[in-house]
Length: 380
Image (tube, rainbow, N blue to C red; front, side, top):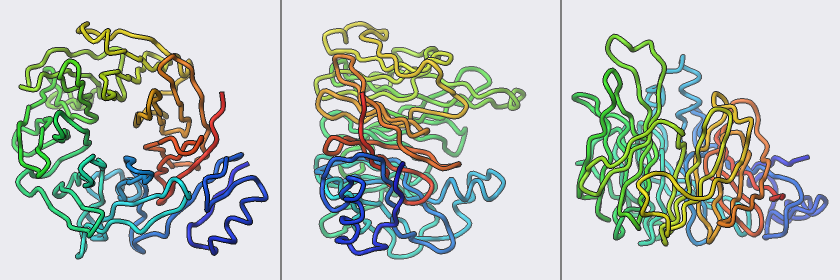
């Protein structure tokens, strides 16, 4: 059993009373007995926006709002179909304590060509965002001031906190030779460094997720390896790179496939690895960081992982635990000692989960179908 509701469709008091019948309180942080999906009002009548990559700060889950996937599917898998209809450019907000949507942060006093991709809720109070087809920037939630990083150009993908408050961002592709890169920005968006990421012969590397290892002072990233030239009909490959802050490549490997990685402030590394049909979370404590290869505890998560249907889209850290979110709605909460609790969140055909976080003994995750956030109980 699960409940799907349109946020704002009934008065808050009525939502609380109705939910209490099944042990769910939408207006407070009561324990969840069954999953619930809440959906915000759509921001556009001409495009179907969904909730994308997210980040949490001070009890608020911020997330990109974008019509990319719906436009892509409705227009013959055209990746630029998001540009066909100008619409609002927004960062969604979800109050985790009360399980309700807050007014979104508006980045577009005039119509924008595309939606928001990734967001980073920086410790400085700003929310940084990427816009693959436009310009990245930041918004100040208090007051709504928006600053764009016009000099950086387009093609920006995922964001992560770097050393000393800087921001790391991947460029999935670019003009010219089309090479991707990873950039380090200061808090005002000025370019500190940009390091090209090139593929093996016959492939173009398109960087995706990025993370910073504070112990080894290294940048981790993974990339799609897209066939080009005479081999354009070949299969996409994937690899993981480790770079020094000067851009020097220190390590590169394709197996296991690291679908996402994150590092805690103490340097503990968390790596979601896929090898065949096996999904594992590797937990590398900081005392093992001296090794240049993957080390640490291997925590099995799934021995029947369907790579063609599922993907680990995000890892968010909460104290000594990591929240591992999969497209399928299976969310794993893994403690440093290797214990695992999981949540099974509902989804309909075509929907994808992106970012999950812990919230009052439950998990809440962005659901890309409509502008939805699902919350559900965690079980052993």
